Image (cartoon, rainbow, N blue to C red; front, side):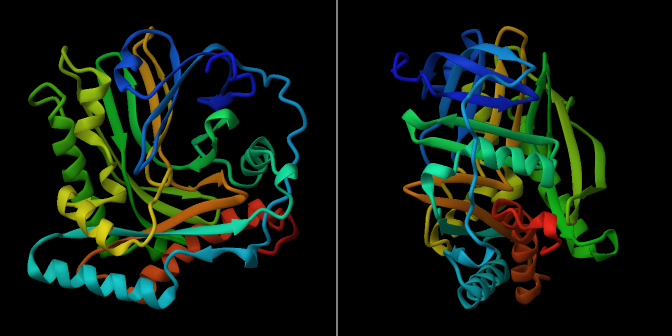
Length: 345
């Protein structure tokens, strides 16, 4: 496999990675040394690629042309009527007391007009220009059928030695004035969930919330974000950390186990890479940064895919939640279509 991985590269944490040394599906490899590009699908097998070369300057990867799908060509796994029905089902589950919040998502898919003219590196460059994001990244390994690019605004896990942190986002609006008491309550609910997740791998009493309900501006919208941190137990390794925290609470719900079950019942197609995690782990330095894979595109079978969703609580208005999913997708799909520069967004 290593010999066949000549085309693989990644752009993560501001660095370009080339020269594949190893590919692993077992997360214990992340503790064995080297710097890894990591892709954790929401549903599917994790992939870790250890690259031998990480540099600040982009490598020679050949032409990165991009001709994306028109904004009107996307088809949704849930149409508006089906999405409103799913919101009603979640509210019924909340009324029954089985769950407090569930994130309901839909996957958008569009056929690529000219697949040979759609290099994922070209889309990555467009996103960096049209939708800069704190956790932007890309993993391109065609031999593994992996071509994923993200403009994620959300931190899943960051490690700095013994310290680990997470930055869940709940609450979205066009402007800060759009954020409501519902958004704040939803955010606090997920903060409690993430605190509980981290407490499973952190020293007792070390888990804290250094940032609560921060308003953060991103292209076309604002989010409410909170930050939770803790000190890892000495014996904790990446398989245990991921087992305790994945999938991210912000894109599942609370309680997480009940939310995941309801998601499986109401969403008609797998999320694939959407709502998983993407980033890097450096076992030698004891550092890592994994983003929640939202605002994320992936290529598969001649199609481009993109996910969007919203958190449903008892106070949710179904129509407003549908519009939130549209808001989250509108700018990004315009960037992929290369229409954002002309003001058609």
